[in-house]
Amino acid sequence: MSTASRLLPLILLTCAVRLAGLDSGEARHLLGRTGFGATSAEIADLLALTREQAVDAILARTKTFNRWGPPAWCVTSLADNAKARQKEYDDWKDLPQPERDKKQQQRDALDRARGMELKGWWYREMLSTDTPLTERMVLFWHNHFTSQLETVRDPLLMFEQNRLFRAHALGNYAALLKSIPLDPAMFIYLDSNSNIADRPNENFAREVMELFTVGEGFYTEKDIKEAARSFSGYRFDPMTGRPVRTDQYHDGGRKLVLGHKGVFDADEVMRILLEREERVAIHLTGKLWKEFIDETIDQKEVYRLSAVLYKASYELKPLVRALLTCDAFWAPARRGSLVKSPVELLCGAVRTLGLPPEPIERFPLWGRRLGQDVFDPPNVKGWTGGAAWISTHGLLARSEVMGELVADPLPPATAPWIATARAKRSGGIEDATRMLLPVAAARQMDPAIGFDRALRALVRDPAYNLK
Image 1 (cartoon, rainbow, N blue to C red):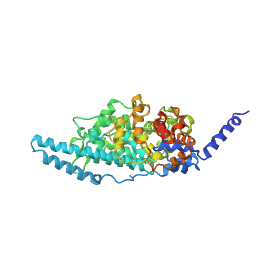
Image 2: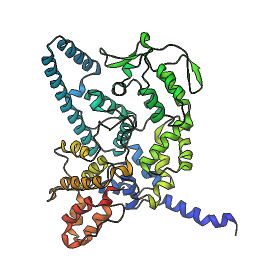
Image 3: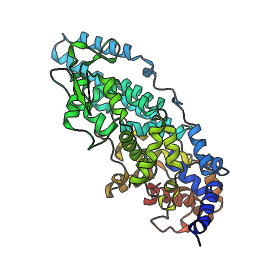
Image 4: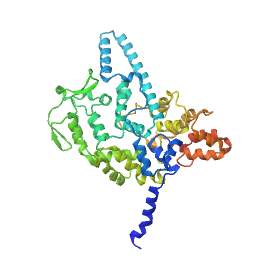
């Protein structure tokens, strides 16, 4: 028998699987990996579609704007915000020290309150969005281009950065990357204001190479120093609220960055980095592989898929489509192979169970308890994620929080599938298990405990932390 004859049945089987409509388990897998849990309506929408059609439908719904109006103070322009803060400083600077301290404490308290309001607003957006993949990508970029409210100390700048990530959520990576050096929140977070010609600050140059573009091992310390010189001289303008280049602080000399010689500024260094298409694409594809497919990177597959990104001139949708339609994504072994982040855990439970989101203020506090304080990642590398979420202490905290979220008794208005399953008694518990868990429950359950108690037990089961 020829090789072609032996392979033909396998080829036909693979084609049949790809052309068949999704079953409910496959639909839940796709929705869980690209959003926050899965509702019964979302599952039903995908059942008649092939894998490729389902992925295309999800990608087609992505947006570049938020659904919910932000807090009222977010309508202030960056320029007006900067001028108001500058006026505060001018009004306070000649006051006696005790009065200055009191004014600063009042300003800090206002910023903290607004920061919590901003965190609640983003949770509301994630809980109610009709395009969960958009918000998942906003969260991905927030952890990729990390900034921290505690350091930036201006909630409006963090809101504007959040809007930037949404505008480019599944757009063009090169366009997003080019906007980052002069993003006000990033500029303050990495102290780029102190990067001047005679005292270069290497913070941003290091992060842009290590975390944002080519990755560790593909640049030298000399490249960092030369790039830092190129990024020098940008100062925060209190009249516009944005960084602007000032020639008196910029190093206008010749530099050598990644083998390129010239009189470079920030834009030109970003262009040089983006010309390293294969390295930038491999680095980003590896991160997206871990986001959507598995913590363990298949280097051969990542290398193959990365070509999709650089051949598409850094357009993100073709790469995400390739990731979500590849065989590795759909392999049965991938079910339950990733750990939900705290945000996914919380938002997924609310969306799948149809729980009321109010009071919204609970969610940032729960997220902080579980180790994911949105708008306040721990450091420049962001949250480690993956298995790091579920230490022994982490699992216990998750069980406690889920017990608080999924209250006893359940609220009267929940997702329609719950009433249907409850009416089936023990059969309904089996339905709930299939709806909520990607793998078998870690704990045996006695059907005699009743549906509602079983439902609460399922969301506290260790298996519910997986996707």
